[in-house]
Length: 191
Image: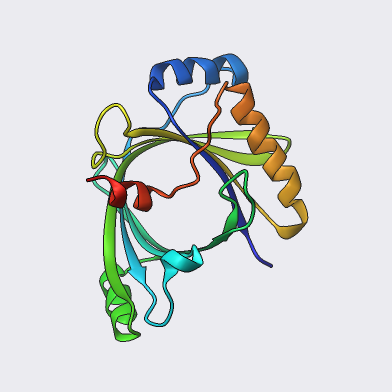
Protein backbone atom coordinates (compact mmCIF):
# COMPACT_ATOMS: atom_id res chain seq x y z
CA UNK A 1 0.00 0.00 0.00
CA UNK A 2 1.36 3.42 -0.96
CA UNK A 3 1.92 6.05 1.68
CA UNK A 4 1.51 9.72 0.87
CA UNK A 5 2.85 12.73 2.71
CA UNK A 6 0.17 15.42 2.81
CA UNK A 7 1.94 18.71 3.48
CA UNK A 8 1.45 22.43 3.22
CA UNK A 9 4.22 24.98 3.79
CA UNK A 10 4.24 28.72 4.58
CA UNK A 11 6.92 31.35 4.96
CA UNK A 12 6.58 32.98 8.39
CA UNK A 13 8.06 36.10 9.93
CA UNK A 14 7.24 35.74 13.62
CA UNK A 15 7.68 32.26 15.14
CA UNK A 16 6.69 33.44 18.65
CA UNK A 17 3.36 34.81 17.37
CA UNK A 18 2.71 31.55 15.56
CA UNK A 19 3.43 29.54 18.73
CA UNK A 20 0.94 31.75 20.59
CA UNK A 21 -1.72 31.05 17.94
CA UNK A 22 -1.00 27.31 18.16
CA UNK A 23 -1.54 27.38 21.92
CA UNK A 24 -4.79 29.31 21.49
CA UNK A 25 -6.06 26.73 19.00
CA UNK A 26 -4.70 23.50 20.46
CA UNK A 27 -3.99 24.08 24.16
CA UNK A 28 -0.66 23.83 25.97
CA UNK A 29 1.48 22.64 23.06
CA UNK A 30 5.27 22.81 22.98
CA UNK A 31 7.78 22.39 20.21
CA UNK A 32 10.64 19.94 20.56
CA UNK A 33 14.23 21.02 20.96
CA UNK A 34 15.94 22.09 17.77
CA UNK A 35 17.29 19.36 15.48
CA UNK A 36 19.75 19.98 12.65
CA UNK A 37 18.80 18.22 9.42
CA UNK A 38 21.36 17.93 6.62
CA UNK A 39 19.96 16.66 3.34
CA UNK A 40 21.94 15.42 0.34
CA UNK A 41 20.01 15.11 -2.92
CA UNK A 42 20.80 12.66 -5.70
CA UNK A 43 20.09 12.78 -9.43
CA UNK A 44 18.89 9.68 -11.26
CA UNK A 45 21.24 8.50 -14.04
CA UNK A 46 18.46 8.15 -16.65
CA UNK A 47 15.86 10.80 -15.85
CA UNK A 48 15.86 14.34 -14.56
CA UNK A 49 14.16 14.47 -11.16
CA UNK A 50 13.75 18.23 -11.51
CA UNK A 51 11.61 17.68 -14.62
CA UNK A 52 9.67 14.74 -13.14
CA UNK A 53 9.13 16.52 -9.77
CA UNK A 54 10.75 13.67 -7.83
CA UNK A 55 13.49 13.62 -5.19
CA UNK A 56 15.89 11.12 -3.69
CA UNK A 57 17.33 12.36 -0.41
CA UNK A 58 19.80 11.08 2.16
CA UNK A 59 19.13 12.83 5.50
CA UNK A 60 21.14 13.14 8.69
CA UNK A 61 19.33 14.32 11.83
CA UNK A 62 21.55 15.60 14.63
CA UNK A 63 20.04 15.92 18.10
CA UNK A 64 21.12 18.18 20.96
CA UNK A 65 22.41 15.20 22.97
CA UNK A 66 24.99 14.43 20.26
CA UNK A 67 23.16 11.45 18.75
CA UNK A 68 22.10 11.25 15.13
CA UNK A 69 19.96 9.18 12.81
CA UNK A 70 19.86 8.74 9.04
CA UNK A 71 17.21 7.98 6.44
CA UNK A 72 16.91 7.55 2.70
CA UNK A 73 13.74 9.04 1.22
CA UNK A 74 12.11 8.93 -2.20
CA UNK A 75 9.48 11.60 -2.91
CA UNK A 76 7.21 11.23 -5.93
CA UNK A 77 5.65 14.02 -7.97
CA UNK A 78 3.07 16.29 -6.32
CA UNK A 79 -0.44 15.05 -7.01
CA UNK A 80 -2.57 18.15 -6.39
CA UNK A 81 -2.40 21.91 -6.77
CA UNK A 82 -3.31 23.09 -3.25
CA UNK A 83 -0.79 21.15 -1.15
CA UNK A 84 2.52 19.36 -1.56
CA UNK A 85 0.93 15.90 -1.37
CA UNK A 86 3.13 13.18 -2.86
CA UNK A 87 4.06 9.56 -2.44
CA UNK A 88 6.84 9.16 0.10
CA UNK A 89 8.99 6.15 0.88
CA UNK A 90 11.33 6.68 3.83
CA UNK A 91 13.78 4.04 5.02
CA UNK A 92 15.78 4.40 8.25
CA UNK A 93 19.42 3.49 7.58
CA UNK A 94 22.41 2.84 9.81
CA UNK A 95 25.32 3.20 7.37
CA UNK A 96 24.91 6.32 5.20
CA UNK A 97 28.39 6.03 3.67
CA UNK A 98 27.56 2.57 2.29
CA UNK A 99 24.30 3.90 0.89
CA UNK A 100 26.15 6.77 -0.82
CA UNK A 101 28.57 4.25 -2.34
CA UNK A 102 25.67 2.08 -3.48
CA UNK A 103 23.90 5.03 -5.10
CA UNK A 104 27.12 6.13 -6.84
CA UNK A 105 27.71 2.58 -8.09
CA UNK A 106 24.19 2.57 -9.55
CA UNK A 107 24.91 5.85 -11.38
CA UNK A 108 23.19 8.29 -9.05
CA UNK A 109 25.09 11.52 -8.43
CA UNK A 110 24.89 13.89 -5.48
CA UNK A 111 24.07 17.34 -6.83
CA UNK A 112 22.94 19.50 -3.91
CA UNK A 113 22.75 19.79 -0.13
CA UNK A 114 20.38 21.70 2.14
CA UNK A 115 20.69 22.25 5.87
CA UNK A 116 17.90 23.37 8.16
CA UNK A 117 17.20 23.77 11.84
CA UNK A 118 13.89 22.16 12.78
CA UNK A 119 11.59 22.21 15.80
CA UNK A 120 8.65 19.79 15.74
CA UNK A 121 5.24 19.75 17.38
CA UNK A 122 3.08 16.63 17.29
CA UNK A 123 -0.71 16.79 17.55
CA UNK A 124 -3.45 14.20 17.33
CA UNK A 125 -6.60 15.51 15.64
CA UNK A 126 -9.48 13.37 14.36
CA UNK A 127 -7.40 10.30 15.33
CA UNK A 128 -4.59 11.46 13.01
CA UNK A 129 -1.01 12.24 13.85
CA UNK A 130 -0.25 15.75 12.65
CA UNK A 131 3.24 17.21 12.48
CA UNK A 132 3.77 20.95 12.70
CA UNK A 133 7.35 21.98 12.11
CA UNK A 134 9.17 25.30 12.34
CA UNK A 135 12.15 25.36 9.98
CA UNK A 136 15.00 27.83 9.64
CA UNK A 137 17.18 27.66 6.52
CA UNK A 138 20.52 29.39 7.24
CA UNK A 139 21.33 29.55 3.50
CA UNK A 140 18.50 32.05 2.96
CA UNK A 141 18.62 35.70 4.06
CA UNK A 142 16.56 37.25 6.85
CA UNK A 143 13.59 37.67 7.02
CA UNK A 144 12.78 34.97 4.43
CA UNK A 145 14.44 31.98 6.07
CA UNK A 146 11.69 30.76 8.44
CA UNK A 147 8.93 28.37 7.44
CA UNK A 148 6.10 26.38 8.95
CA UNK A 149 4.95 23.03 7.60
CA UNK A 150 1.78 21.17 8.54
CA UNK A 151 1.90 17.51 7.54
CA UNK A 152 0.46 14.05 8.00
CA UNK A 153 0.68 10.65 6.33
CA UNK A 154 -2.19 9.21 4.33
CA UNK A 155 -3.18 6.24 2.20
CA UNK A 156 -4.89 6.56 -1.18
CA UNK A 157 -8.22 5.96 0.57
CA UNK A 158 -7.97 8.86 3.02
CA UNK A 159 -6.08 11.44 0.96
CA UNK A 160 -9.03 13.84 0.66
CA UNK A 161 -9.79 13.69 4.39
CA UNK A 162 -6.13 14.39 5.25
CA UNK A 163 -5.86 17.22 2.73
CA UNK A 164 -8.97 18.87 4.19
CA UNK A 165 -7.62 18.50 7.74
CA UNK A 166 -4.25 20.06 6.85
CA UNK A 167 -5.90 22.97 5.03
CA UNK A 168 -8.27 23.52 7.98
CA UNK A 169 -5.36 23.70 10.43
CA UNK A 170 -3.59 26.27 8.25
CA UNK A 171 -6.78 28.35 8.09
CA UNK A 172 -7.25 28.15 11.89
CA UNK A 173 -3.71 29.51 12.28
CA UNK A 174 -4.43 32.39 9.91
CA UNK A 175 -1.93 31.16 7.32
CA UNK A 176 -2.39 31.92 3.65
CA UNK A 177 -0.24 31.88 0.51
CA UNK A 178 1.25 28.39 0.73
CA UNK A 179 4.61 27.73 -0.90
CA UNK A 180 4.82 24.68 -3.15
CA UNK A 181 8.55 24.94 -3.86
CA UNK A 182 10.88 22.57 -2.04
CA UNK A 183 13.60 23.84 0.26
CA UNK A 184 16.07 22.54 -2.31
CA UNK A 185 14.58 24.77 -5.00
CA UNK A 186 14.39 27.80 -2.70
CA UNK A 187 18.06 27.43 -1.71
CA UNK A 188 19.25 26.77 -5.26
CA UNK A 189 17.40 29.83 -6.62
CA UNK A 190 18.88 32.13 -3.97
CA UNK A 191 21.87 34.00 -5.44
